[in-house]
Every structure is written in C-alpha cells, then in structure tokens.
Amino acid sequence: MARGRSGRLMDALETARDHYVARHATWGAVRRNEPAWLARMRRDAAARFAEVGLPHTRLEEWRYTNLTRFARVPFELGTASASVSREALEQVSFPVFACSVYAFVDGAYRPELSAPRALTAGVRVLSLAELLACEPERVEAELGSLVDPKLHPFAALNTAFLEDGAVLLIPRGTRLAQPIHVVFASSGAEPDRVRHPRVLVVAGPESHRELIVDHVDLAPARGFTNTVIEVRVERAAELGLMLVQREADQTYHISNLGARVGRDARLSAHTLTLGGALVRNDANVLLAEEGASCRLNGLFAGDGDQLLDHHTLIDHAMPHGESRQLYKGILDGGARGVFRGRVIVRPGAQRTDAEQSNPNLLLSPKAEVDSKPQLEIYADDVKCRHGSSIGRLDEDALFYLRARGLDEGQARDMLTRGFAAEVLDALPVPALGTALATLLATRMDPAAEGAGS
Image (tube, rainbow, N blue to C red; front, side, top):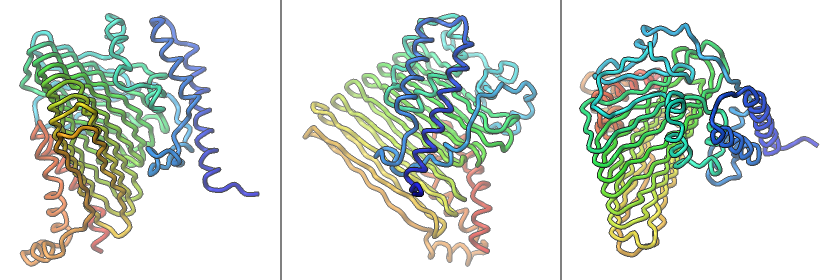
C-alpha cells in the first residue's frame, strides 16, 4: 500500500534527523581541548535533537511550515573558504553608514576582512571562539540561558555543532554613537553546506547601543543557516537590534532569538527578511522586571515559491510593561507568509500596555498569508490590542499614479515602498532603512514586471 503524504513527510524528517545525528557523532569524536562543560552541553544538545528530531506540521507551532524540501537536502559541515576578498565582501555590504564591521565567512571569524573602529572604553566585540579561549566561564554563564536547546530542536542542532559566532559586551553607562555591523557571509564555494552561527549580547545597565546582524550570500549556492541569538538587556539599558536576512533564494534560514529585558530597560528588535527559499524566524522576549519594554518590528518580502514564517512571543511577567509589534508582509508570485504573534500577560503584570499588528500586502492572486495574532491575558488592569489585515494594491491609487505618467511597474513599486516605509523608517539606523528600501525594490521588480506583462 502506498504511503500517504504525511508518511512521506515523516520519512524525510527522520532521514534528515539521522543524517545530522551521524554527522555529529563523527564531528564530535575529533573535538579536542575544549572545556568539559561545553563538551557536555554539545552531547546533551545532540541527544535532545536525536530524541525530538525535526518539527512536523502536526505540531501547532509548525503547522504552516512544511520542512519536506529542507529535509531532503543532506547538508554537510563545510570548511571556511580562504579565497574571499575584502572587495567581494564590500560588493554586498551596505556602504551608506559608518560603523564597525566584523566579518564571518562560512561561520568563521575573519579579522582581515573586518573593519573595526575605535570603540568606547570597555566595550568588547569579539568572536565566540576567542571568548571561549580566554574566558570560558563567561561563555558558560551566557550560552543557552535565553534559548533553551531542550525546547527548540534547531537550537539544539546549533548548540551541538557550535564553533564560532559574535559576542558583544557593553559595560554599564556606555553610550555609543556608531552601530556595530556583524556580517555572516556564505562564500558559496561549496554547495549544500550548513552554518551554525551564534550571537551573544549583554547590554549592561544604563548602556545604549545599536547592533546590525546581517546574513548575506556572496554566491547563489544552496545552503542552510541555523542561527541562535541570545540578548540580555539590563536595568535601564537600551538596545537597538536589526536582523537582516538577504541570502540567496536557494538558502534555508532558521533563526531563534531569545531576549531578557530588565527593569526600565528597552529592547527594539527589527527583523528584515528579503531572501531565502524557506525562512523561519522565532523571537521570544521576556519582559522580566517592572517597567521593561520592547518593540518587535518586522518586514518580510517574498516571491516565487518562498515560504517566510515569523513567530513571536512577548511575555509580560511584571507590572508596567509595554510592548509594540508591527510585522508587515509583502508577497508576490506563489510566495507564502506566516505570522503568529503571542502576547502573554502574567497574573500580577498589571498596567501592561501591549499592541500587535500584522498588515499584509498580496501582489499576486497566488500569494498567500496565514496570520494569527494572539493575546493571553491573566491580569485585569491592562490595555491590550491586536489585529491583522490582508489586502491588495489600491486600484484607485494605481490609476492615479499611472495617470501622472508612471507605468504599471513604477506605480506598483511606489505603493509597495510606501507600504514598507512604516517599518523601514522606524529602524534605529536610518541609512539602513534607505539601503533596504532600494534592495526591496530590486528584489520585487522582476515579479512586478511579470505580473504586469
């Protein structure tokens, strides 16, 4: 009897799980000279991944994200390409703002490709491998504290294969004028390679900083990026975090962001998704102390058969917290978007003020979006609002613009830019918003032309 679609999916997921478990057994056997706690953490994470495997669509959290295409590619660990030049990296960089640039290629830190500027005294930006070598106890205290490998199968996979990543340590009272730009680039020198970058950020009390984490491909080769970002924002600190995903359309990208926000502190996190065959971005924020606040903004734009999935969770644990979420989707061709946003207001978290919104713009009859904002409220003195919408370009606005000399493609581009502007204009680094608006227009133009032909 022929196996059904569900059976074939489970077969593919189990085969992929077995592939990564076998690769870890081989890879882990040759690891040397690392702390016992790290080796134990790797083993535990690998065991957890072997136990739970890859998530399937019968799980509510993964209902709209079918991993069959991903599971059928046996991604391998690759070696970092030594042939990448600074010129190649500069061609895909955002040259429009001054900042310190820290470059990782194929998962490994490349100081010769980086362009660090002088930092305020006490601020440290270094590779995770470097911090492991000089202060392993600091890494032990932070690693896995905000994204639990036991709860997230891809975080378990990241932890099992962890090698390098970026660390930003900001001391008390430090206010920095220039953003830090961390670039994770794939050389494309080897096809079907996987990278497991890690990012750790600790913003000390009363500090202020902007950080850009930028994923980009230098060549259009199929690959898999599996990243984990852990962020701690301490008392009265402010952190602006911009997560940019502009990899090739053949790339699979999974991201887990875990953040803890302290008393009277503020996190502003912006997720910009403009590439990838299948993208899943999870953002979990704990407003852990009184007066903590956060803003989660997102923009995802896709065409062809891209699947762009965004899940957020904001947990209001204490009184007088504030949160704002605005995620906008722009979908063309046969692309599909997913937004599932949860806000939890715990008992005792009185005077919480929470708002979430998910407007979506469909540019094609075949484009789809699944939107599910959710509120779970267990306190009575709160102000919470949520909503979502799905619409198409305004025909009257299109007619108006065409009557003034714009062709259909130009009119669509102008209206699409206008829809995205609310998210891009809110970026803590305005020049990044300008650069991303240009990139958005470039990415969506071919689809617009096809739709208009």
